[in-house]
Image 1 (cartoon, one colour):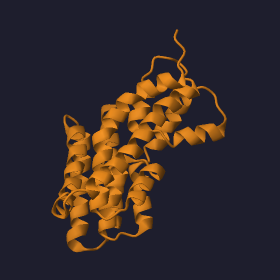
Image 2 (cartoon, one colour):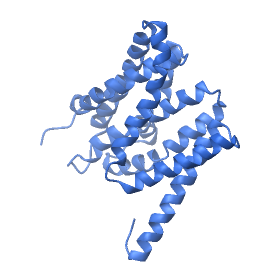
Image 3 (cartoon, helix red, strand yellow):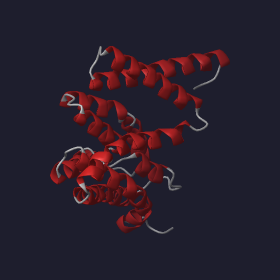
Length: 235
């Protein structure tokens, strides 16, 4: 069997890098139009490295949301990473905790999918790092490139690009809703709750998003858990 090296990991991760190109590019462009500097936008991709959460953060920044609420929203949106890293821990070869803690930061939905679906029982650390590093590097680089492109757009186009942020959210949501009633229910319930808070002004934008995400997720899980109990199965 061919040894899985660091370079083999980078090759396997190149497909992720290609997929990140339009998303990271758009993020960098939108970050420029919402007022972030090149350093700020690139630093967000370096330190946060969470696509959907970074887009949400842009929206919250434009409304003047408290930074703590932005952090809390990011935590809720990315809480699934606890499960992904725990699962991946069983797939990767034994390694020291400090090394695992470093590459665990690079785990995303895409890198997890590439690594978790490998047929090998155990994967070398070098291979995993190769996959994740090329994906991470592409996200950061394309963010900077997108910001550079945005900086050279005419002022009226920079303002008009603000609508692209909402289009991106729709583009992320719609594919996952197709044929999945659970996701449809989750999205609709979260939208109703958020609209309620928006029109009543009971909560600020940041708190409204956080509460809507938590309440809708918990409610939908309870509904499906009860349905599974009645059928005598599992969710």
